[in-house]
View 1 (tube, protein in one colour):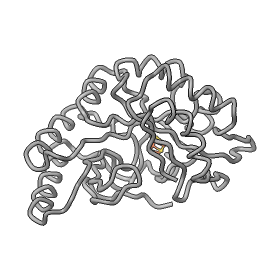
View 2: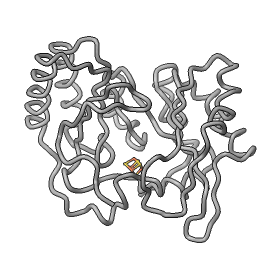
View 3: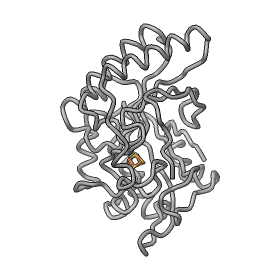
Length: 257
Ligand code: SF4
């Protein structure tokens, strides 16, 4: 599987969830660095991405983004979101918080209408610097793929001890502000069946939502190659069915089949 993002700034690309999205990759151009190792990761397994170079220094991120924004403004290219995604978990960058400040400055200067979005697995949002930076962005998007510890650990393979109850605690400062992102999939991994769409799974997930109070919810399924061949995508109809009880409660749910 090839990595998706070989430059610091890429796009804009049409995103299923974010509109015209200008990507920022804080991870190595030809590697992958993550504190999860999800079975559906489009960047492949962590073990295959260890020799892909260094993370770009904040000066490089700033310069790369500024040049791209100058071009975007001069060519009148529409951008809805400047999005931190890329080859791994952006909050692992040691200068993450300074970079967020730089990107806010550049957005205000060149593209004041664009949102800043960070796609994070949430593993480090309890660190003071990461938390404060994530609270400054328009869309702190935080992953929770199951409200059941066993399923979450099987699907996401966190490289540290991961408990859903701790995720809930870490999310407390983000109540009413964060976007919860959940990947729905089913399949078999290492001989173990998983399915985060069962009634029991969804009951726990709805309960997690009511308690953690996200501003919006993004539900989606895989649409690319995954490192594990036994991951099945979920139909758009099923995603709609999963979202329906939340929509009737008044949540804004963005569905990407
Ligand atoms: S958290 Fe994101 S980058 Fe990390 S392994 Fe999972 S899908 Fe890949």
